[in-house]
Amino acid sequence: MKYTIELTGKQMRLMAKALEQHSRIICGHMNIHTVPAIDHTLNRVQYKEGENWDKYMENRQKVEELLFEIKKCMFDGTDMGTDEWKHGNHGIGWDNEADMAYEMYKMILHTFENERQSKEGDEYQGNVHSTPPLHNSDQPLIKVNVKSDRELKLERIVKDD
Image (cartoon, rainbow, N blue to C red):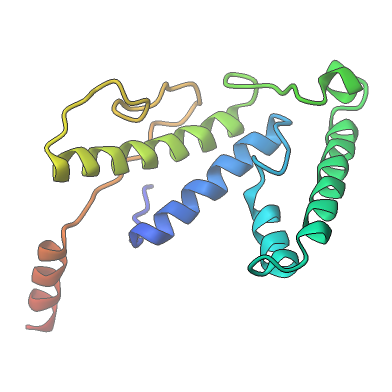
């Protein structure tokens, strides 16, 4: 069975972020930069346009330390659960679910890059997102179909008739 989801570009970017975070957390790649949802909330609650900068930075540091403690718990009994691995993590090929989430994330970015190249007439193929991602999971790569505003308008007209 296959499913279709229709998203706006903004919704698709949020889905890509969530997929990337999911993949990175499974592999132990956890810090304030790779779990942006935490920094987003810290920024919104603590920082507020330049207010409370010191408190924001203090809590950001606390979050970094707590994320490392979580990582040590997750990987207790392995090298990744030690201080030497504070900035280390597993990567592609370590976990099928992480690979699948990362492939989905990269396929979304590949779609955005194709769209950008099409709009700008740019055919540069050296961009990391110019080609589909490597395939490591046990699932096929997702397919992302882009509908133009014109196509959406025509669908609404046909639907209204």
